[in-house]
Amino acid sequence: MAQRRTLLRVVAALLLILAAPPALAHSSGARRTDGLRIEPLSHGQMAAIDTHRAAVLALAERGPSDETGRRLLNYEKLQFLVCLWGVMPGTLDDETSPFNGCAHAYLAATRALLAHLRGRPDATPDVIALAETVDRALLLDGTLAMCVYSGEPYNTADLILPEWSLVPAHPPTLLALGGGLAAMAGGGLLASRLRRRERPEA
Image (tube, rainbow, N blue to C red):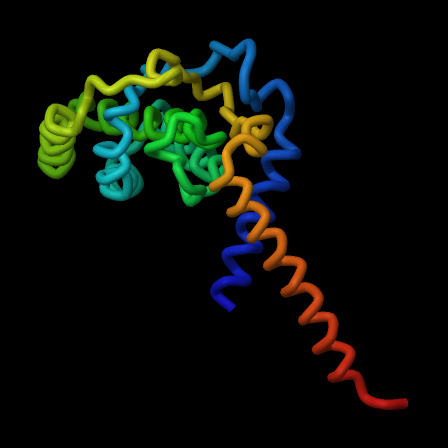
């Protein structure tokens, strides 16, 4: 049952990606700039931000809010969904992954959200403490490691999609997606057979 729910979530996310308006979603090319600018994140910073992501979101959701904070939080969550919750192999540590670019986007938004919370006049001690912890982690965890996405700024008006054209050249992603589709097909076939068996005979 849990596996089925996970597969349904993946299908829902894929449908959202496919339905995203061209004006909002991009995998490459021209980017929109009419939203909030989000500073780029280096490849070496990704793991440190990801480690503290849940804590940042928890503070943002339970603390004082303003329009900027809500926009950053909403963008972060939507970008995380589009990136299939970061579960694809190599999403964070492999710059050749089709999902590495969209992971840069949601983690850059996480860092921007934390910076915004820290800069508010009513920043709580918990926010300050978390921001200082993240600062230390960024200094220790390979901050200078760079990749092709490291110098790219983001914008809340611009949803970054996975690079689907790279999937055939990235075997781990290809296998993961193929396995997911096979599991969905098998689950659908099994459910169909069970329904036929449960029908009363005429």
